[in-house]
Length: 159
Image (cartoon, rainbow, N blue to C red):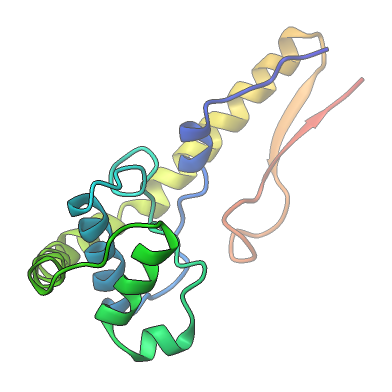
C-alpha cells in the first residue's frame, strides 16, 4: 500500500485560484474581523498557516447581521467563538486596520492564480513520482479546459 500524504498547508496552496471579483467591502470586513479576533486573543484564525482568504469563518453570520454592518457581524463572530463583546475602540481599530491592509491584500491576490497553479503541479508531480516508485507507470495531463475549473490536472496510473 502506498502511503501518499501531504501536509495540509501544502494542499491548501493547491486550492489558490482567483474565484472572481470580490467586493472591496467584503475583503475589508474579513480583514477587520481577523484583526479583531487577534485583538481578542483568538489567534488560530488570524495568522498563517491557518489564515486563508476564507477566514475567519462566517458560518453562523446571517444576511441580517451583514445588513447591520460591521458591528453586528463582529458581535456575532465573537459570540460564536464565546469571546467577550468588542468595545467601540476595538471595533474602530480593527476596521481601520482592515481598510489600510485591503489594498495590499488586493495586490498580493494577483499572484494567487500563479501560486495555486504551481502548487497544484508540485503536489501532482510528487504523487505521480510516488506511484512510479511503486512500479506504477503514470501520466500527468489536463482533464478538461482550464476555463472549466482551475483544478484540472489528473494523474493517470496503470496497474
